[in-house]
Image (cartoon, rainbow, N blue to C red; front, side):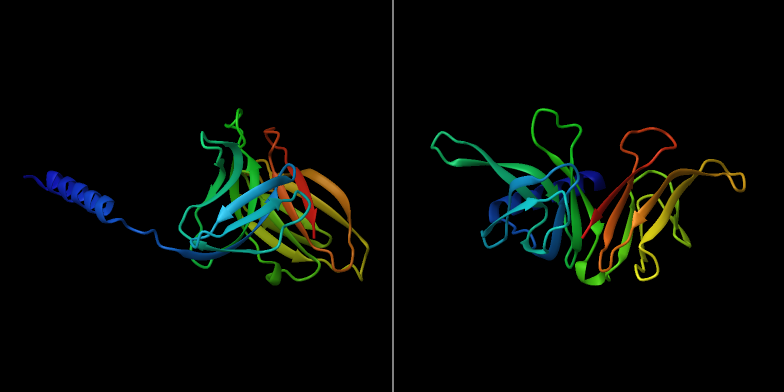
Length: 229
């Protein structure tokens, strides 16, 4: 028997033993809050390892409270749709997420463009903890595929693709703030092109999550979405 055949045999034996004796998936302790990208999603559920079922909804306005989860990965979110032959309600998984022990994420529910005939969402886990965000913080999440340069009042900083950066505002200094965003359009010096410019109103104690995307798919353009809390 060659080495490859040996490992195939061992692997098959392990799978057989696992199926005969059963192997419980490891339970994970994690926390999450949720937010819907498009519109409020009602009647969502998840289940813990103990079998306890939790019902919640994903708002479009601001992140939810923090939920605790103890159970195996993946964590499946589901809805009840229809009934079986015996009249029992059927669960339909609409989103899945694989947390790691100790995780605390904001789960952004984004409609799955590949699922045109049934309700399905992609989940984008973002680093977010309400306790760690001071009042007046603006956290910028760059969901576009290229870096963005941001001028926030007098401050200028860069947010790489797929990353986030935070900055504190000071409403006591000014109740308005000029915000601009630029893309580096070439390798030439000073070739950054401003693609967004607006005046934002600041309010005491108000924080925001700022999402930078390229939803419309137009090259060299970005879309900016602010969610206050």
